[in-house]
Structure formats: C-alpha cells, structure tokens
Length: 234
Image 1: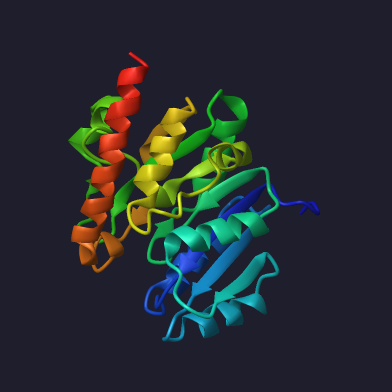
Image 2 (image 1 turned 45 degrees about the vertical axis):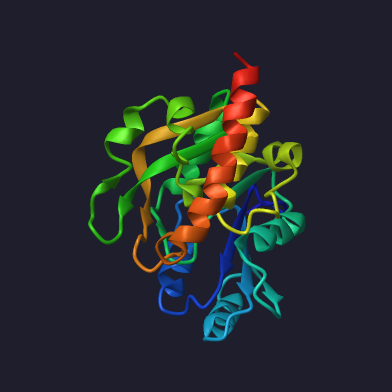
C-alpha cells in the first residue's frame, strides 16, 4: 500500500454495538485496500467505543475519534472530513454493509468518467428487495422535488465536492444527506447513479424510521429551497 490512501471512508457511530462489527468488517474485506477508515464514536453509551478500539489493534487503516457528547451525524461527518487526507471521500453507515467490490467499482467510475460523485442502488437488509425500485428510473432532478433519490451510505465523491459545497450544512441536524445532494445540484456537480446494488441498507430502527417527523421537517426545507433555485436555472 502506498503511503497516501486513495480513499478516506467516513463513518459516525452512536450506540451501534449490535450492528457495528458487520459494518466495519464489510469495509476491511473490500477488494480495494488503499484507504483510511475514519470512525467517530459520537457520544455512545453502549460498547461502541470499545468495539472500534479493539479494531485499532487489528488494522492500521482505522482511525478512531471520539465525541464526549452526542453531536449528531452532520457535525461528526464534517469533523471526520477535516481529518481525512485522500483525494476521494466515501461514506459508510454504522448499521449498513458494503459489498466486497463497492469501493473498487465506484473508484473506477470516478477515475475513468466525467463524474464528481458516484452512488448506487442497494439491497434492503430487512426485505432483501432492491431499493429504490421503480423510482430509480424517474429522472433525478424531477424526483428531487419530492425526496432525496440517493442512498447516502453509498456515496463516493471527489474531495473537491466537499470543498466546493463546504461539507455538510450543520443547520441540518436531520436530512443532511438531502441538503448535501441539493447543494451538489446547485453547483452543477455530476452524479453517476449505478443500477447495480453495491450496498446492503438497514431500514429497521434507523434514524429515518425513528425520527420521521424531524426528518420530514428538514426535508421540507430542502424541497422549498430547491424549487426556488431550480426556477432560476430555467
């Protein structure tokens, strides 16, 4: 492995001890190995910190950071980005699983084609169905008026994307992924959405299901903003 990693993988974990090992292992078992894995323990009160700390002894690519209090996903990801060093940035959620070829496939796209961001479809961990289903075929700039069409955990992007939009908007404690992609559209960044699933997404007991009202409130703010600047481009 070269001294400088090609990809920085950002993961924030809060009270994720039941699912964390499978998620971390899915990254460590990638067929692409030249990465750094930055993990934030975001004020957990279970065994999350201890689990990550044990992995430090097993793999030198992992770096552990710790928030003494729970700051939330948005601020944690921005803190991790500031610690990252690679030319490409990837996301991984603590309760999801990346398929073995995920990083190599997405990196190949970003290096060989004129895209700034690469995302993919996923397999629903709970139902085993492909997601999204029919909505995948709807033009994304139309779908974006109603919801975020992209699966945040599948994100791999050039570093300049985060620099150009100034990372995640910290006013958005929820729906930060919707706002992130909205900001990408605002800056005319090009997104490749792979038809093939490269990720296994947990939809049970996650933040979207537990904080539905809060997510909707912040998502509505993104929708309203998107309608305004979309009209300016017509």
